[in-house]
Amino acid sequence: MAFIVTDNCIRCKYTDCVEVCPVDCFYEGPNFLVINPDECIDCALCEPECPANAIFSEDELPENQEVYVELNKDLADVWPNITEKKDAHPDAATWDGIEDKLEHLER
Image (tube, rainbow, N blue to C red; front, side, top):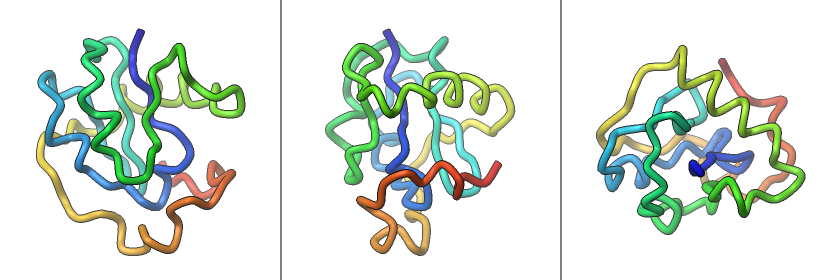
């Protein structure tokens, strides 16, 4: 099972998780990160590092976040790999904790 980046990452895009990933399976979009499920080794190092609590194990994914399983897979195929921590999205503090942000996802 892979880990999945979910709704709360949108417009936050903290990259603390990227820094601890031993297999560099994170991919970066304009205002969201995803995990490539084919590369994730289920080590669980990323989950506690996410300040926005936006990363879940696939088997512990909240029901209302299931759309993010396919979204992580699809976007990892087109977005560039990210391997180093960067600054969070400029509005991260404002958007952290806001629900239902999928409409704000920039591809």
